[in-house]
Structure formats: structure tokens, C-alpha cells
Image 1 (cartoon, rainbow, N blue to C red):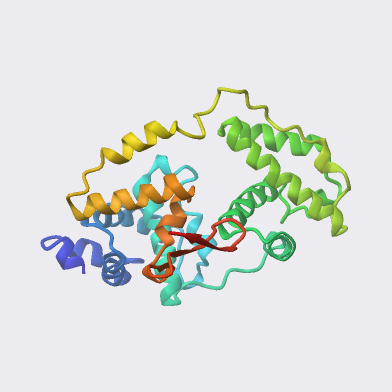
Image 2 (image 1 turned 90 degrees about the vertical axis):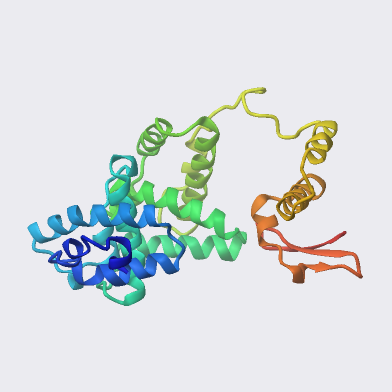
Amino acid sequence: MLTDTYPLCHRRYACLPVLGAHLDGFVDWLRRHGYPDCQIRMRLRAAKRLDAQLLREGVRLQDLSAAGLLAYAPADAHDNKGLAALVRSLVRYFEEQGLLAATPVTPTDTLMAQYRAYLERLRGLSVATLVAHDRTVGEFLAFLRYDQVPERLTNLHPESIERFIQIEGRRQSRATLQHTVAHIRSFLRFLATSGLGRPSLDSRIDTPRLYRGERLPRALPWQTVQAFLRAIDRSTPMGRRDYAMLLLVATYGLRSCEVVALTLDDVEWRAGHLHLRRSKGGSFNVLPL
């Protein structure tokens, strides 16, 4: 509650014309989701600025959609971390409370839903990979201004694709840009097979080159791994936990997200089996303990 966060000056937040009536519940929601006091205060400080802007523009919350509220976040979160964090959290809170207007379905939404169904049905991609494709394709469609000019996708030229990749390359490493190019190629193949775009455009994009020795080593010598495991203090519960997690990574080659997702039900001690759901592809493996 506001009085717990600001015992002496909570009224200055509760009296905000647009957001004030919702901030008490918002703070309670943040606490229930585990936000520390410093993060809650950072969001409340930014609430004054957001409230003033909403009041100045005559905006009512019931007229705002999630996308409309997100538009008040800075384009670069580093420009104002407090405002960016506040807007993202408010969107989640207001959506749970049912206080935001329904977001109108745009041509981009429709096309991306079709593409997501294509990736799930034909390629069986993991959720994390689907999210990455969504992000890249959404940025690409925004670059083309697809909602305003849908025919740009039908008449797409390689020069437009190259221009988008050049812009992305200014803020991405070559390794990351390789993934972006792969996402765009996949989307262009989808457009061609669906009759929504020109064929063979995917073959017109160059992939950034990565040189041998440019990246960090993919594996450590086994002697180094063993020395690292021996260095963990297993006399404490935290040390034993860390040792178990890193041992799973070293011996089974598990990803960190796969280790975190393991539960006691996945371990069959007497049978000597470990059940694992792979993060890529969603397949299940039974491994020996």
C-alpha cells in the first residue's frame, strides 16, 4: 500500500488526477509479485510525470488500450528507466484488472498470428524461438509501415530488406544479426509459400560472416571443469545446490533454463532416471542418473 511505501507523503501520489485512484492497488500488486521497495519507489516517482502527460492530453484510462499505454514508454528504456518500468508494469496490472480498452486488431497482428501458427504447426519451434521470430518480424513490418501501406509487402524489393538489416546491424553484433537474418529468411519463405510475397527473396540476403577465434570458446577443457566443480563449497545447502546445478550442465549438457525447470517429479531415484523436457523442440528425454 502507498502508506507503507511513503508514510508521510503518500497523499501526493493518491491525489494524482488520472492514476491516483489506482496507485494503492498497483503498489499492493507489485508487492505480491515480489518487487522490492526501491523498484516500487522508482515506479511511483515516474507516475507523476506520466500522470501529468495523460492529464495534459486529456486521456482517460478507460479509453487506453495496452498498445496505447505502451506508447508512453520511452523508445529507449535507458532514456528514463523509471518511466519505462512504470508503463510496462501498469500495462500488466491494468490488463489483470480489466481496466484497459480492447486493442484493435491490425493487419500486422493478423499476419503475425498466421506466421506464428505456421511456425508452430510445421516447424515445432520452442516458445523462446517463437518469441524471437515475433520480435524480428514485428520490427520488420513496422519498418515497412505495413499497417499503413499493406501493398509494400506484396511488392517487396531486396533493397528494402537490405536497408532493414543495415539498420539492425548498427545495434547488433554479427552473431546476433545472423539470427535476425535467419528470422527474416524464414518469414520471406512463409510469404512466398502463402502467396503473400515474391518467391526467392530469402536467397537474396547475405549472412554476416563470423571468423574462427572471434567468439568465446564453446567448451572448457574437462580438467578445468573438474577443478571448477571441486572449488564449490558443498558444506552449505546453497553450495550443494550450486554444485548439483553446475554438475547437470557439465555432465548432461543441459541449458540453464532446463536446469531451472527441473522438479522433484522429474527425478526417479530408485529407477535411476532423469526426465527432461528439452527447451528446443519440446521433446522429452529420459537420461540415466
